Length: 355
Ligand SMILES: [Zn+2]
Image 1 (cartoon, rainbow, N blue to C red):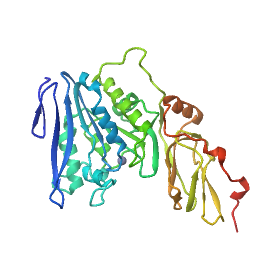
Image 2 (tube, protein in one colour):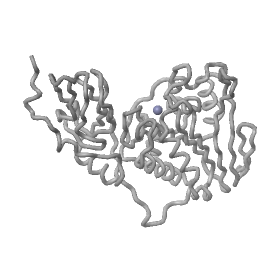
Image 3 (cartoon, helix red, strand yellow):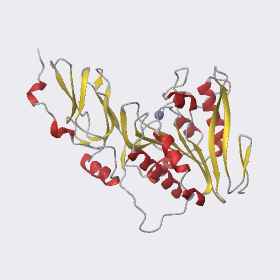
């Protein structure tokens, strides 16, 4: 039956859309906290896809992707139902912070509780009111502040339905990773809803590649689910996706000033120098080396680092060069992939230990 769709007191008929506000809690100022969703009903039947962003309030790229998706004229041809939640965590979004006002991480509070803290209640609205209505989820995240991510999708291992959606999303890279207890992705998995987690860019900053791959990904998943008409022949542009099952962070060998030498998407071999950290007095300079062969999917952009800080996230692959070529082929406007190694100012013998 392709009939009415009920959410938060709204009854939305086929061919209509609505802005729905779901009450969550009140703040100490007495201001209400709501979870706002926009719902589109196609005239014709089809599945229900939910696209969410800003679970972490400072990961603003996803909100921009969802905003642009909502404004796209192609939604007129929608089959089925699209639920867009551009800002899942509004109080953190307003403060421009990752965490909730009580300093907790919403992504550790799922499935949530109706009588719990603000975050637990938010999680409960997501799992109790929205998740039961949907067939699939796209959840958008970014790196932390000053930590950029190559556009990538994360899926849980042995989750075939999610992997199918991840491939339909067609990002430069898919990373198979386990879910954490209390995360939204885990809640989707438990509810039996395929979910792709899009990770791209950095917190509090919009970038063209993240927005472009994000929008293309959402529309591509919608076409895969037959929620939008297929592309005409000749328009179809499948780009290579590298699937990785292992990744690791290479960390600062000492505290000091950090100079990266390789950018996002670059191929690296185990032992390659990725950058260097020097103390401010010119006494020591220590290289940061790759602990495995693969390509760079995340990088710190901080000039000042502490010993042990995560600097390079490397996704392991058997053929790093092929992966890099695929990434270059997949997008002309990837986040800057500079060849910083060319103007590395330091000579090799500086790396010996000082007494
Ligand atoms: Zn996040």
